[in-house]
Every structure is written in structure tokens, then in C-alpha cells.
Length: 432
Image (cartoon, rainbow, N blue to C red; front, side, top):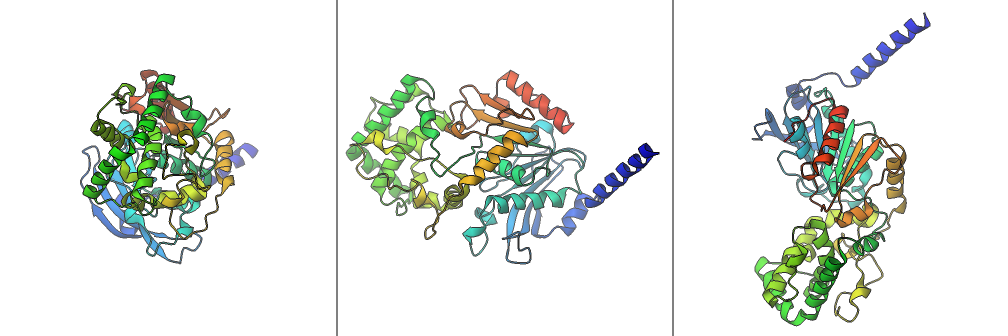
């Protein structure tokens, strides 16, 4: 009799759970979606339908009847019984197919991060750009579409999008079944101290020395290279008010070179032009560092990121002492080095406890995570670490960069990742 009562109770619990997400067709959901616009768009032939949606979201989820903004969401539909890959962007969103949606030939939802491009509240009130508000954006979108899809759910994202995956699962651990953050750091401060030891040991001693010598060379050749910098800036309409001056921006670009060289790994160490012409040296610096990063025009795009970096999600800083006597304009102000890139007029206070709590969650309570990193990527210095949590996997691609993806892992690592995902998603992958 007791077993019978327990069985009935289990059935009732399942029925009540189902009532929380009553089944809907895609058309029914779209017809009742709180959105300003829903536009059907062309997509990869894998998908049956695709939509560009401007979803109405509260600026402050704690005050749902207050001001709102529209958040750009791309929905790609294959079949209601297939898994759903939710790509939580860290920045703006573009249309297109993600790697995981392609691997599993399944549905995809791509979400632009609040305060970027089409998803910016008007007016901008920076106090609502928090990890919890952004995670709650994602949570609400997932809840809205849960009635349509009956397969497993997976969140994924690249770099800052990978951070967004971690933060969303920290706040809403039961929203989805699986998470795959790509190359997402978990920084413990606005200038995390773990980067310098990593850069002092990454790659080979010979390559590290060439990187350092190139940086010194571009500072020593300031008088011949800086005019080229000004010429390129003038042609592209760049200004450097936020950085302080073009001279400071040039020197910051030299400091950035080390991070950028290892992050992307696109240029072989043998190609560093230590004995090249001034033009070859300048072109190499421009190609690797990207001068726009310190221009007002580049900062305007990344400003929301740097607000988060200076309040919750952290970043790195530079070692000015390594170039003592060579730096004439850029210097250590005693404040975070990238504070100038964050919105001005704000009294910044960093929340040092937040990332530690996320780290604790990943080590103890996280389930069904696969973390992907490249061996040479500086962001591996602050990689998420599951520790002894065997419910999560961390994969490091040998010699890999910030471009590490599932399909460029070693065959053994690919098989491990895909086999695990097939089990968790209860869906067969397409192996190429």
C-alpha cells in the first residue's frame, strides 16, 4: 500500500511539473511572446525556420513593472523534440549557426548581452548591468521557450560568452541540462595577479624572449613608428581622448602585444620581425595588437564590458616595470590599468566575493559542465577549475589559443567531449 501511494505521488509531481511548462507549438509561442518585433529570417538549410526577435525585458528584473528594453534574440528551429543550444553571448549577437548546434543538428537560441548594440536600454543606467540581471535575462528567455521544446537544453558561449554561461548556471543551476563554456576566464580581480606568472612560463623560453625583445624594439623605435601610428589613426578616424593621448595609446598597444600574441596564436614565433624594416615592424605590431582597442571608437563598443570588468568580472593589467626607461608616456597610475575604458563619472567598487562564490559553485555543486581552453591562451591563467568535482570536465588543447573549439581538439579529446555530450543530451552527434 505504501509503495502504491508513493507511485501515485510521483505521478502527481510529474503532472504538476508539466503544468509549469504547458506544451505549446512554436507558432503559439511566437504569437504570445512579449516582443516588439518578430521577423522571419533566412538561415542555414539545417534549420526549418529562423527568427530575429526583439524581446521586451525589464531593465531591472526586481522591478518587472518598471522601465524596459528590447533584447535581440535569434531563434533557429529544427524540431521540438531535438535539444536546444542556447548561446549566451558576452557582447553583441549576430546570426549564424553555432558549433554545437551543427554537431547535434538541433535548435539554437542566440542571446545578445544586455547593454550591447541592439540590446541597450535608453537611457543607460549602469547600475543594472550586473551578472545577476544578465543571467536573469537568459533565465527568462529559457523559461519562455521551455513549453515549445521537449529535448535537453544546453548553454554555451565563447570567451565573455563563456563567462556568461558560468554566471547563468551559478544563479540558475537547474535551467539547463548541460553547459559548454569555451575559453571563458573566471577572474578574481580587476587586475588578476595570475596572468603574469602564466605569461612568464607560456610557450618556449626562446619565443617568450622574442616577444619581449619585439616589445622593447617598438618602444626604442618610437620616433620612427609613432608617425605611422598617427597616419593609420588619421586614415581610420581614430581618436585617443579616453586613453589620454595618441602617445599613451601607442605605448599601451606595445604592452598589449604580449597578451594578443599568445591569445590568438595566429602568427608563428619565427615571424616576429626583430630585424625587419620599420614598415615590417609596424605592420606586425598593428596586426597583432590592434590599435583600435585603445581608440575612442573601439572603447565605445567595449565600454559595457569594461564596466563589468571593473565591478564584477575582472580583467588583467600590465607590468610597467619590465619596460622601465623605455616607456615615456604610459605609466602605472595605481588604479586598474583599464579604468579609462570603463564609463566615466562612476565611483567603481569591485565585488571580490562574486567570482570566489562562482569558483566554489564550480568546484562543489556544478553538474554537466565541459570547460574548453587553449594551452597558450592567457585566459587559461584564470580558467575555471572544477578541482575534484567529477561531474564536470576540463579540456585543455595542447598548443591551443583563444580559438580553441571542439572540432579543432585532438581526435581523442573530440571523442571524449562528443561522447559525453551524446550521453547527457540523449542525442547522436554528427561526426566529421
